[in-house]
Amino acid sequence: MAQPATLTAEPRTVHGTGEMRRLRRAGRTPAVIYGHGREPAALTVSSFELGRLLESIVPASTIVDLTVGESVHKTLIREVQRHPLRPGIVHVDFYEVRADEKITLDVPVHLVGIPDGVRNQGGTLDQVLRTVEIEVLPAEIPERVELDVTLLTIGKALAVSALVIPNARILTDASLTVCTVVAPRVEEVVAPVAGAVVEGAPVEGAVAVEGAVAPEPVEPELIRKRKPAEDETEEKK
Image 1 (tube, rainbow, N blue to C red):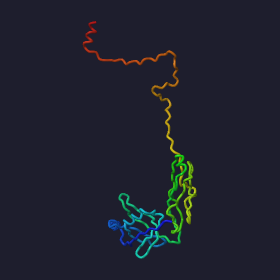
Image 2: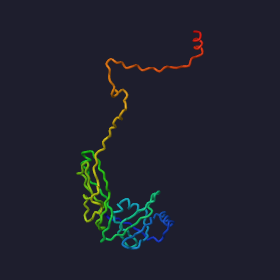
Image 3: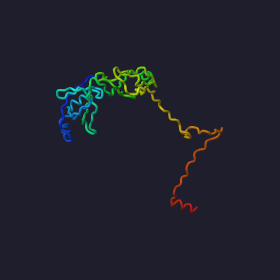
Image 4: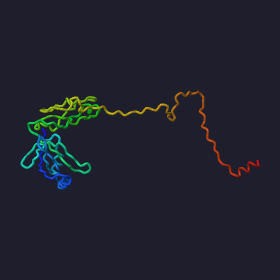
């Protein structure tokens, strides 16, 4: 099972674009917590701590114990908004979960082993589906789903139906392909263009005549302008 992570938040009373910029300059990231019919509550979290947390977990499938004052809320990170041009997080959404209520989320699929078609036949393993959607209790959320691919040969595939997740119901279509082994790429040989003549090669349809001699190439006639002295010589003749 995925191990819970921890983060501390503070209530937020200020709103507006200008105030949000001031908070970010002070090293705080605006946030909100919602879920189970409760009114959304505005928060702030340490930008440094949030960044470090996101580097160590899979946000969509990791329970975060979010401490706000004296209360600890079990949450999932539902959305992380990043600035389109500058590094840094603009806003983060926390969704509160209950221990006795199942939730729907995506978990990553991890392929295990080297397929036979790759090791012995030179094929390539292609992972088509990288996450699957499941319904599960918060305490049973897996960190990832593993799929053994060692027996896959070239042209064979494994579908979602091959996945086994204890205590969870897979919602993704069971017929969808998770991974397949494709054949090695064959180098294409370019065929000669019809009608093209290769220098030095015999022309198709030509008949060889015994004793025939190939004509010598005719040299081009050299035409040059006569000099005046040459014209006078011709007249005297």
